[in-house]
Amino acid sequence: MTDHTTTDALKTRILAEIKGVLPALDDISLDSLAKVLLDAERIFVTGEGRSGFMAKAFAMRLMHLGLPVHVVGETTTPAVGACATVVAVSGSGTTAGTVRVAEQAAGAGARVHAVTTAPGSPLGKPAATTW
Image 1: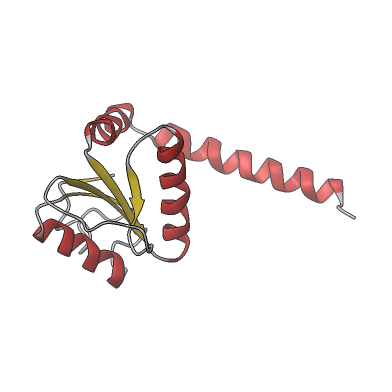
Image 2: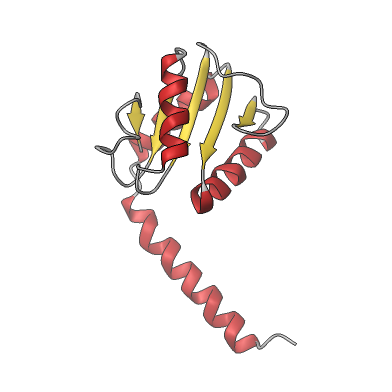
């Protein structure tokens, strides 16, 4: 059985964390990201661990919006090409696999957009933008 006191405490904590992050969001950057995604011919998302899990959830939401999105590394994902938009997610910006995908995508002519807390990190280098 679930302890409702514990459940309520968890919901309160989650809401407090969301409320703490929301004021830090920059509307101009969010609008810019939305435009990039809406204008993309093909969107690819990549990340590892918890960041990868959130990247996959983000891809699912983009798919629900009707956008052409793929998760790097899945069996049905096409090759990343020059017309691609890649969203690479890594909190540290140093996750080797994510950085490698971003570098290879940039080398293939794709536009890479990094979601990281460290814009000056190795992930930020091949990125056209960082959020």
